[in-house]
Length: 118
Length: 113
Image (cartoon, rainbow over all chains, first blue to last red):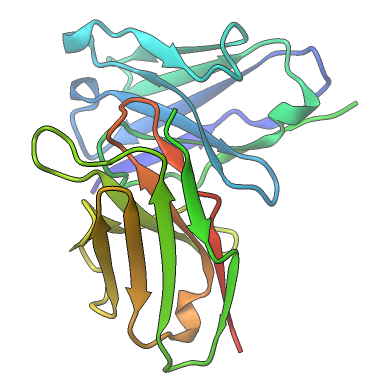
């Protein structure tokens, strides 16, 4: 069974940094590109970014709203993808989800909550 | 960027009655490979989204057959033939023709009368 588990969320002050993790199991992690999404409280789903599999260069892409502050990386030996978030803003408060980057998203983790507040 | 627009914002449905909701994309979701990349998700309260329908009309594994999808190009519909109490939540459509930049509609909230 495909499983994705997000972790690393928490309460931080504006301007601080946080690193989220996405741990995969039940599939060959390195074969897949991975996407990150977020959902602000009471709001809809927003694509945040994506990282290609190593076979396709392992390069990331980002939504314009987060470009320059967020960095996605991966460690296939550990089956983990990371979302490094710097210079956090109040509007980054959301539940963050990772998924395999497919045409349709059949597997979601429970997400991890990031709260940015002073 | 492709914009996805869902209507209505909310639905209040009597159990056993049908429900229907719409999704419109700002560009055609028909890919050159012949597939149309529109999927539907249900997010129940306090849970992550779950996939219901992919490529317009294909039900995902385990999804009851009371859910059906239709449409083409830029206009799509999700129908529930007989709403059950467990169907409450927010329904989202999503385009995936423009990988990796996936976009969702704003959602349709379904409540039980």
